[in-house]
Image (cartoon, rainbow, N blue to C red; front, top):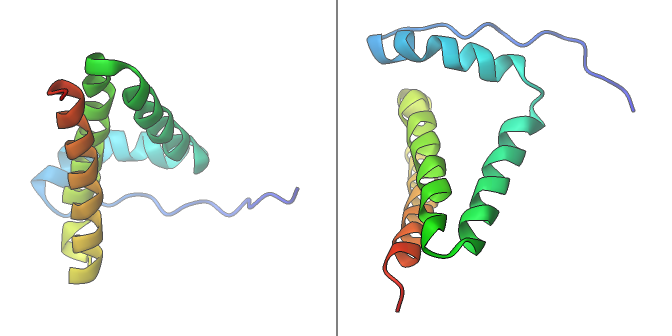
Length: 102
């Protein structure tokens, strides 16, 4: 399996929120690209099968997705913003369903 040895660009902070988030974004940039995806997927699966307590891992996913959305908001086109808001709304809806069962 070929590896891509080209380094990723260093995250650059342009406002206060990005400056505060810079250590975490550097950490994420240093991880293999599949790690955040696998962790988010695992948290969603865990949340889906845990019953009412599943709202906790789903809440962590929502916080992570909102953080990523806030960081990328100025660079996104309106359609991209809408798609990301829809994903966050979907996970929030799943968390609400977990907390308030039928």
